[in-house]
Image 1 (cartoon, rainbow, N blue to C red):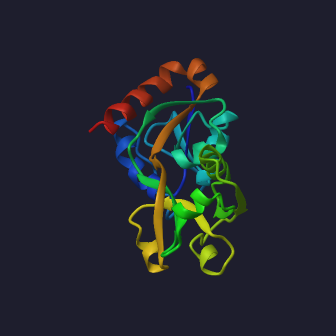
Image 2 (image 1 turned 90 degrees about the horizontal axis):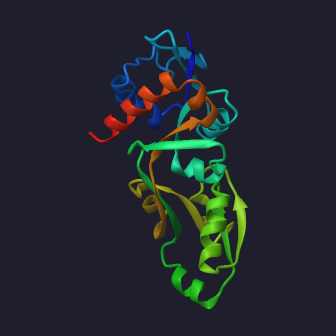
Length: 214
């Protein structure tokens, strides 16, 4: 029996992936939200799930520790996508990558004047490429959470972060001023695994593709 390993992260992506798994005939034996197990079986003896940090999903798939995975476009942009086949945009966990500033900050004026901006973000590669394309000089400050705090205490002028409803920005007197890109989660596949286990992996890809269109 050929074993198929699918890398997932806890939280919103996992919950929104459940209907896609069901479409592929895969049901987890337990929920990662209530279990401490990092390897979870399914109703199919040939398919198992591994639970990893969202930012680590591409790495597990790239190096063959997982055959497939589900990762946000934001994570893939930071990772670079090397060695990964991305056959399906699953249209789940949607949000936007945005530049945000304190309300009243003249972002467009600063850009037009050629001001050097301090940018706080955990998406350093994405931010670097975005501002370089605009010809804006920046100092990057890498943070891992509470991005909204940075401009409020003078650590940065702007932030680059994911925005869903904008509620957190509004609560902290910040405003989204520029969209970098739309974000959703994608199915990623190890290219070598797809060749070696094509008969087992391709039906899963096809089921995910069909379900994502519904």
